[in-house]
Image (cartoon, rainbow, N blue to C red; front, top):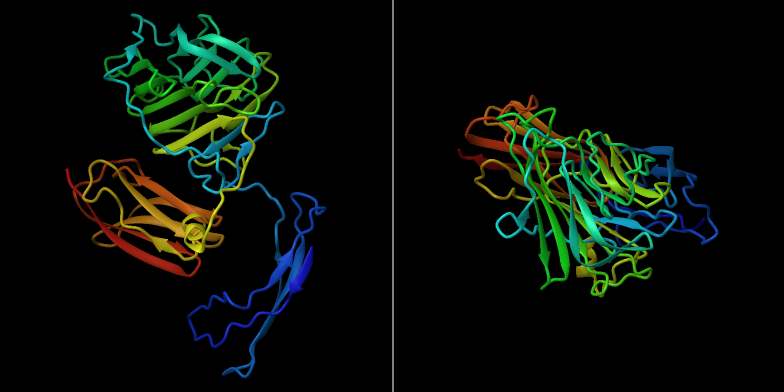
Length: 400
């Protein structure tokens, strides 16, 4: 690592204020030979010149080199599969969340009487290459997974991937124990061939967790025809989409091969890969063998759209809302972020997020619940962000 320009000047800074210097920055270059995941320590010296009072401080800072970040793709595994989420906007391979509803046009897989775990094998409308092998059939499980080939296996207890459990060629979109025999159960399972867009879709619609029937999830898997969506290896691309995520605390998300010794795990029981994004409503994840390519930008406007240059808290949408609303915000640097909901009296209702976050654009979903999970009443609420020294509050309305 080479310090090219070690001095920067920030002009007059008033008390309780800050200054961003964009014209006279520090400059450090990193050699291609620098080891990955390296944590060099630098000394930063701050001092006043002709100020109202003398001030000097020397402190150490760490500039991480190629450390895993939630902005990075996940993987690859030893065969070349990567996972990109819709939040990985720095990479050309990232998917856009675009929910495809098939509950009114798809074929329902009926739930057998007296059985909560069931699997059905169906024919694919095209050959799908997965980990180097071609398949014409896929078995669909009630418990949030599919697996290529024809079998009748069921398995509701999720495991980390890869897993030597004879359940091979598995794709786990939300592997958990779903459906119930009780009167409060419900949920539907559909599949649909979409020849116009050369894809095959499986949807789990409002499926309840066996442990808590109040937690109901809606998600889907989209298989893209490799003949129309080519990859370097010929392996097909797989997209996970999550329309409604209530409880992602006990599940597995990822893929594994036919011999169950290679896989790419995104999430297992609240343990995320360091590069993975949180499983929330409105997120998409694509598994592909396309290698990461940084998005190309032609001007500063496009760069600003990708990497924020200022703190911001956007107006929630929809507003007014019932039962959920989305809150978006941006941070131009790593920050300790706290995003909270307050009632009209200033009482804390819900902490949506608290912790360190790297530079990026984020959104959070509020489901109209307090910190105890109890639904709150109609009325005016305020949401407030604190990120380093940035503070902003906005108003929203919950109507029932």
